[in-house]
Length: 126
Image (cartoon, rainbow, N blue to C red; front, side):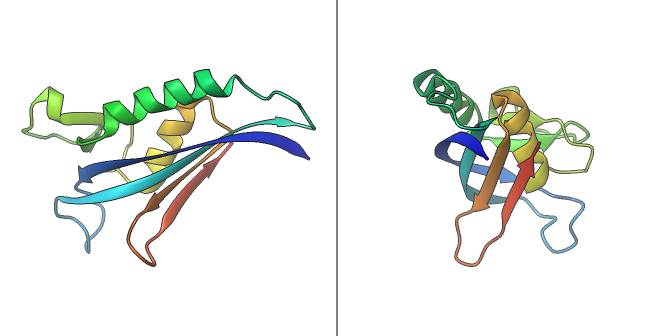
């Protein structure tokens, strides 16, 4: 058993996953993101939810409206238009984005879902 606090938010971003023959063009997504911060067992307070929410809002503001580039990708865009995600693939995957958000938030798990009907969600859990 564990006790968790969930934080939810959304961003609109673009990326070019060159590793995908189907999606290797620049395109955008509206992502719904849920972050879970958990402790094993029952706890009346897992984390200061207000402080964690503020950190999450700050992170989402840095990502929103940006082109997501992997650390191995070159882009002609200016630095203020790009957010670099530390991914080895040529382009940012949903899985890599979920792990990056988990790392920055100190989260137990993160779910990144594309907003379109029947679209995938990407999940990372520690």
